[in-house]
Structures are given as C-alpha cells and as structure tokens.
Image (cartoon, rainbow, N blue to C red; front, side, top):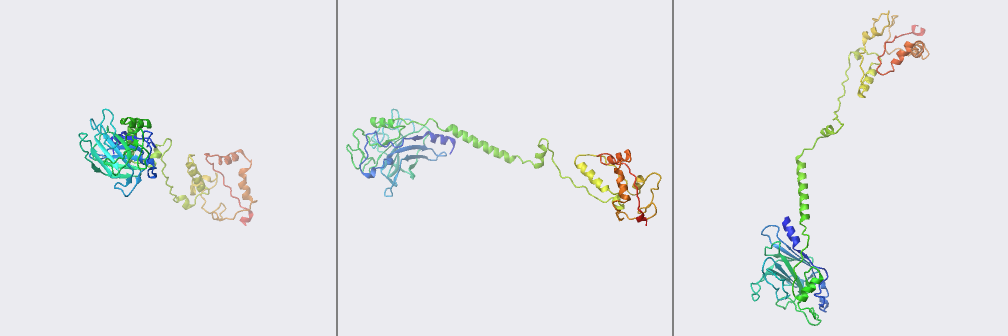
Length: 402
C-alpha cells in the first residue's frame, strides 16, 4: 500500500458517536428482550480503502457497537440492516432506496449502494430513474469481530463520500427494513414524531443526527481535518534515511585497530619489541670480570626507562689486567697465579673470616683516609659517572701462607 492510498483511506474514514442508536430521541426500542441490546444498531465507523495497486478492489468496512452472530442465517448474523450510499462523482440518485426513505443533500447524489443484512451483502449502481428496478449483485462479506468487511466491485476515487444508516431487519419485507410502529411493540421500534425507520445515522454528532431524522434530509459528511499525509511522509523519509545509512555502512570498510590507534591524537601504534638475542661472547668464554653482567642489565633497564647513557667499553682478559694493574708492577702474570707464585682457582678460594685482613682491606674504601678515596667511592654511586680504576690489593694471612 503506497502513501497516496493510505492518505485516501484516512480521508474516507468517518466516525460516529458511540451509544447514539436512538433515532431522533423519540424512538422507542421493541419491548421484547431479544432487542434489548441497542449496540447492535450503533454505527461507529465507516471507511473506504482503495486497492494497494491499480486494478485491485476497494474495501468497505463498517464498525458496529456489536454484532449478534447466528449460524441459522445466510450471512452469519441477525437483527440489523445497514445501507451505505457512495457518492463517487457528479450526478447520481437524489434519494435513498425505499427502506430508509431519506433525501440526499442538495446538489449531491449517490452512484453506488451497498446493503448489509442477514441475507448477505449486495451492491448496486444507481438506477437510471426512480421507477427502474435496482440490479443487485452479491458481494463478498466477512465479519472481523464487530466489523463488516465488504469487497466492492467499483473503482472509487479519493474524493468519494459515503452516507450510512442502520435499522431493524425484517425478513418478510421486500426492502429488508422494518417500518416503525405508532405505539410500543415487542417486534418493532416505535415513535410518535419520527417517520423514517432509521435507528442510527452516520453523523459527526447527535445534533446532526436529530436534524437528519427530523427533516428527512441527509447532511454532507464531515471529513477529518487532518489526513495524516504529513506524518506519513515524515515516517517514510525516516525509513529511507535509515536504509541509506545501512547501505553506506556496508560499503565503508572497517578500520583496523592499528589504524585507529595511529589516528588517535597523541597515540602511536605500538609494535611488539623483539627480545635481544643473548649470545655468549669472548668475555663469557674466557671469564668476564666480576660485575660485567650486572652492569649490562643496569644499562639495559636504564635504556628501557628512557635514561640513555654512554656505554663504556669494558676491558676483558689480559687487557683488563693491564688497565687495572698499579704502576710499577708486571701485568702479564699468568691467569690463576698470584704474585708470589702460588696458584689459586678463581672463585674456589675459601672465604676469609669477617675480622681478617681481607675484611679490613675491603672496608678501607669507607674510611676518611683521603679525599680522593671518598670521591672515588661516591663516583661509583652517581648515575652517569664513569668508574675510576681502583688499586686491587690482595693480602694473605699467615694461615693461608702456612
């Protein structure tokens, strides 16, 4: 169903007040309990819905206060008869059929009529003259709750108007309408003033209904002011925008996590750093000086933290011994041999006692014997200060010589 069809259906939807099935106010219902439910005659809404495409039939819907279902009758319901007159253009019949016996508004006429009764739904076009018979044709009728749904065989435009009236069904009347009684009756409505056997009229309010039944003249239907077309266009525009957005989203490739991180302000794409290969060098094979591995770890950790320091080349082997030997002494002594000619394995000598000469020699660096010694010791704790060569003093106790 397109927007034009929806707008037309909204323009042809006419409402009637609820609970006004009382004629002009003087109408008395039948005294039989079978007719106690006045909502069976209460018109509430009449609408015309054109087909969704060209050539499809128009649908007429008539909503009632209630419908008394009955399987004993051909149409499946009982009690009520409804006439709907369709004004589809210029001209047309100027009066309703003999059942309601009402006149059309001045300058108006009807081209098609639909009658819904317990016999079924029937349709006809306006006869060419008042004396010509009405050519009825059966129409498809379904009941959905309290709504009659009729499929029409005519193509109707958006400017069509409808008029509807309801009354008491009479199976023995040629018009299907039961006439009013002048006095209260158990089988018919009665009134001292009203002439037309109409119980309810499709009208905007009760006053309009009273005027129609008092004068016997139908009033032009009042269309709703708002057709709903602006809201339909707005909803349709929203759906189009949403579909276009989904289409664009499928065409744009998703950015990778690295690209998102690189485009973020103040953020750089981080790549995992490969660990440096640790291979044994000449120093490890020949025996590096004590503390070389510890200094390498400290320099590496300092570089990772952003503290860049110049790396001083560390002498190993014989070169280290030549640089650390004091002046006037031979630095070419063979490895593992002390100055007095005794051999000693590296790292296998027994630890001297804490109060021995070696402990005293190691503690000399913390004495106040000279400013130069203090400066050398402090220089070892200042970051970035190159270490100065220190004199290595090896003393042996009398017990070791023995």
